[in-house]
Image (cartoon, rainbow, N blue to C red; front, top):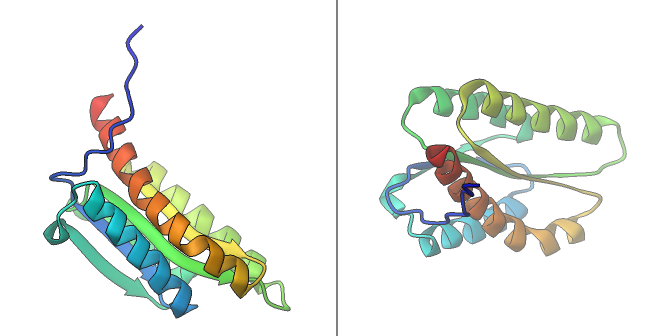
Length: 149
């Protein structure tokens, strides 16, 4: 049996990032951790393109455009949706995740979804550094895996 092993080598990979500006402090923390991990994995700063959108619901459309452009090997969605007093939290959380999955499946471009969905700011602050770094590793691994299949 041939096994395809995990490959976290990021040299030469072109990565696009879509950052939701809503909950800016959390987004900035996600972005800092993500970019630091991409560098650690060998992705050159010149191979990373950062875009920003108002909120998580706008992310799938920009990700779709980036995926269809042929300019990126993989994409990362960053942001935070924090529960409020209304049903809007569920709508934004579910629809942004659905849209991101749909783009990934329709285009074949891997997308690491690091749009946090938390009950409060404290949970988001605790998770932002870990999830930002994990998103970078996920996208590099998935790009390399798809190239190996």
